[in-house]
Length: 255
Image (cartoon, rainbow, N blue to C red; front, side, top):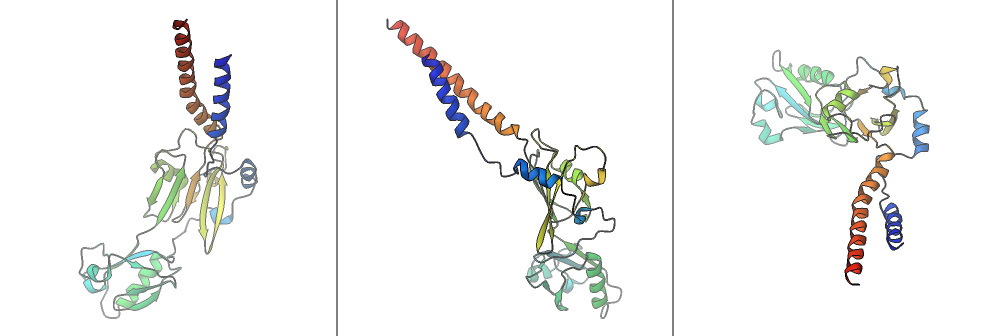
């Protein structure tokens, strides 16, 4: 009787105290609403998508053989790195200061467009300049139930969900594959998508393209919380059993 009473009290207290909030899990109602909503057109496949320069981007400019025009050049180590740093930061107004050219608004330029524009400017005093432009902070973030959640620096503009999941070690055991959330910047706002990659067919709406700036959240299955509680309770129940056994031995030998 004494043993059962102690066990019952400990079990109730542990179940109550082990309840934790999973910040990577939406409520069931929110999931149902999101999953029934068609994907925003922002997530549809775009064969010719190109990343557009944004505020706070870090940009390197390389001009072959022109130290004074290169910042963080991929062609070698130039003295200009010591003067300007290893990149140019796009400020809150979308501007950067380009050596010998001056202030330039680069927001919404693709890398190709910006490189062509630089070649035209530099071509006014250098014949056939070789120019390259690189965005240094193109990142896709994967969080949640993955074996190696991390921030991926990507060189390509177009990547796929499963490609980045593979680079993150794959899904973990408790990954909820029916409610994967993708958050994508769109101007001054963000757009969300909920993906069910277990559903048959409709491959393009499951393994969607991921763009720099995307955040992918893989939530936990609901039974993860229960399993964690059970794992916590088992050692305690073993301790209670040991306590009761010692108590019985002590009371028996003392008679």
